[in-house]
Image 1 (cartoon, rainbow, N blue to C red):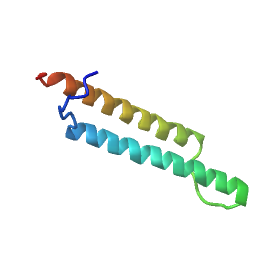
Image 2 (image 1 turned 180 degrees about the vertical axis):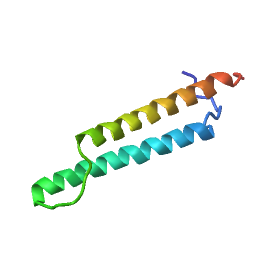
Image 3 (image 1 turned 30 degrees about the vertical axis):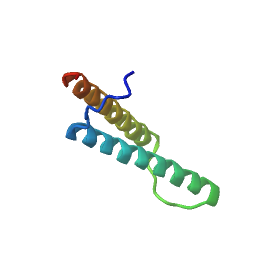
Image 4 (image 1 turned 90 degrees about the vertical axis):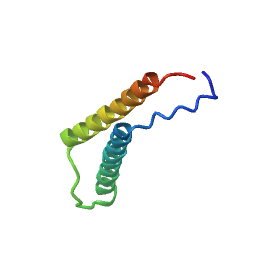
Length: 81
């Protein structure tokens, strides 16, 4: 791999996909921590169930893969110098 490569492949679409990934994955982690706190401390804080956790994690995975594919397409579309 060439370390001198200065091509910029941060397209707005890739940034949006990464933002969606970080938001949904953060929501998933927050939900897991709230669920654990409910068990350990006996709190009654609302948290999403198993199906919603699965859907949130699925959307985070799709957003991450989309960002990777968008960045790769932008990288391959630019001419090499």
